[in-house]
Length: 502
Image (cartoon, rainbow, N blue to C red; front, side, top):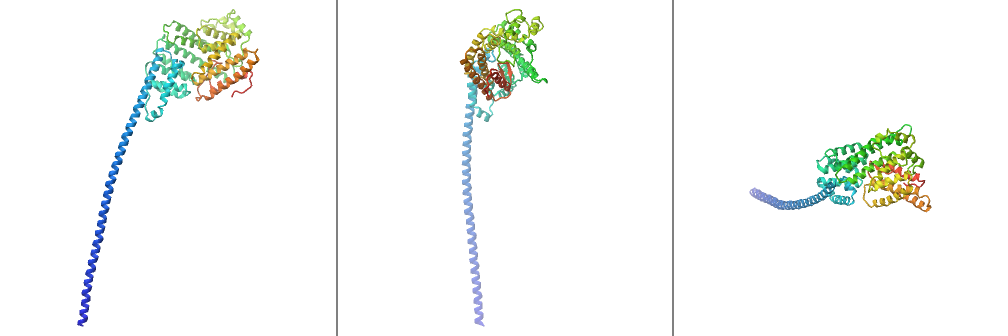
């Protein structure tokens, strides 16, 4: 028992010893695990701290780099803006120099009619176009003189609607003096090209308010008001003819004269006042324009849509001369409105001779002006042809044709180019009627007529603005593009040519 008890006690002691040792080992193992975890966490913390420090350093570097890039970009943008502004200032200075030169001449249309100034205008506008992309991005406002130059360039480049919009804005932005006056004039002129005659007249009349009645610009404004009123009368008459329930009714020449007699009186009075003026600026140009407008009105009175290419018969002309009491032809009219109630007018109506009489009046007006321009020379050639002055008309159309070909070299608005091409067509058509004795020349003229008609229609096809009208050299007024195309085809048809032009 003693031995057994000793063995059991020894076993217990050993168990306790081993148990204590196991617990110590477990404790040590736990301490090692905890220490390893703590060391691992410390290493992680150090790693994260190092990464954070590096990230913050990198972020700082990125921010510094972005800051430097932004500063560099801002400097570049500022430099570009300064350069653009410098270019705009230079363009504004050139625009102002050009316009002040034109203002000094007191002639509204000089900047378009004079080739040198027109080229300068296009050069300025071309330089401006090179900046337009940047200007639109930066929303940089153009100065006043540059805006006006840009609008005129848009008009010449067949963007009439944009030009009208630009001038409307310019007229509301407080321009003063001559710049405001020119803006108003050209806005009114462009409105006439799209058939807005009432608004155009209001613009012209508003432009006159601060002018004296003997100022050169006042005469120009009064002249274009008269022309615009004529276009309005002619348009209303055409609409009335086309809308008749009985079919298209053509207004007789006598009735047409009644529609414009008062206007003719006003233009004749304006011409007389112009001659009394002591101002010489633009006087010759305005004199030519008044004469052209008066001649246009008389030729419109004589217009016959059924005989675009035929001269009047000699008996018709003789009746007109007899009704006027002799063979002198045209009769000086003190007042057209008074002439309407005169015995001479009654005789003209009874003899059905108002058409040749109107052409005589137009011829007399053209011949009374010295140093005629191309428009008046062409108008005179038409009168001579219609009045049977074949030999003189032949020379006149030959001269006009050469002058018109020179006009092709100039940059005009598209509508003007179309009118010039139609004038060439008319020259060939008239010469075809005048040179019937030469078969070889007849063949050549027929070929030229086809070519001229096709070129005229091609110019019309290039026009982008549907509302823009074209001045008809046959009717002597503005007509729609569709009417103009039909008129060109009718000229070819009445010449007996069956080839299609478009």
